[in-house]
Image (cartoon, rainbow, N blue to C red; front, top):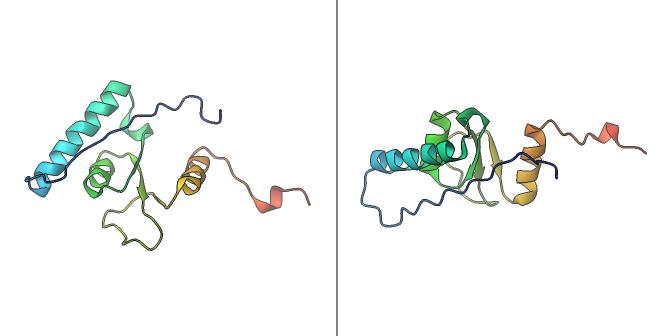
Length: 111
C-alpha cells in the first residue's frame, strides 16, 4: 500500500564459473541491467538497485541508479561506494521510507 507505483524488476545474473575478465563481466551485467530498465520503461535516475553483487553495484553507480548494498552484519565491506547499506529487510524498509520522505522522528511522537 505504501508504494503503489513501484515496479519491481528482478535481475538474476548467473556468473558462477564465468571465464570472462572483469571488464567482460561488467559489460554483460550492464547490458542486462539496461535491458531490464528498458523492458520496465524505467529511467535509471528513478531506479533503486539492491544487491550484494559487486559488478552490478559498479555498473549501477555508473548509470546513476540509487545503489543499496546488501551486506550481512560482520561481513566484509564492498569496494564500490553505494548510497545505502542494509543487512536485512527492515533496513531496506528504512531506506525506502527515507527516499520517500517518510520520517519517524522521536519529537513527533506523542508522549
